[in-house]
Length: 287
Image 1 (cartoon, rainbow, N blue to C red):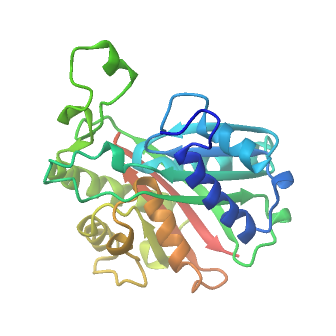
Image 2 (tube, rainbow, N blue to C red):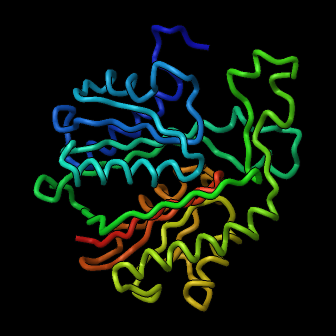
């Protein structure tokens, strides 16, 4: 436990990732006017972790938290993209501090080994102010949600008002893995193909697929549905072996580690999918 006067665990993770992103984008605190902390869980209801991070970094403007399970990173980037398009922000810092291991039921053989804790951060800004070495234009965003109980976590402040054990198995992360696989894979493939069609692109036009890192078989099947063949590691990077399932941060980790080989004009797609069901994607083009 930390006192109220100490930086929270999740804010500490977020600040570390944010500083690295700001350095890579050549941005100081004065350049940023919005901070979004978007992740699967926040460690408290309020004050927002995003506002704590904003204060620690010395950023003006405003900040808020978002919870969209494993699609939180892409959904957070959606909000940033829309703010830039609307002119309500000039530079947005989107952070995904995924502190998920406390919600793992370590007696559940189907899920106890899945998750890792990690934080990622991304800077989105208007093209005229971008000065970083690697720049990507967001051509568009696409999101969809469909209610499902197949991935669920019930722990909340309401547990205190019941007679249930607060850490009973069904209060922690649990899922119907086979149902998730069967239902989400075709949903994600259709989502991506439809998004690409908006730009008159086909899966063959995509240089790299930065997909959610939950299950290697899901990514393999989705790519096979889209490409009509198996995708190799260069096309659809997998980072599960090193980072495990890092919730919404997984696709961003894949992007961070494997984007540098892309050339000007190349297309890629960043896509995450998770509880909800929720799917979010961004079509990107290397500047």
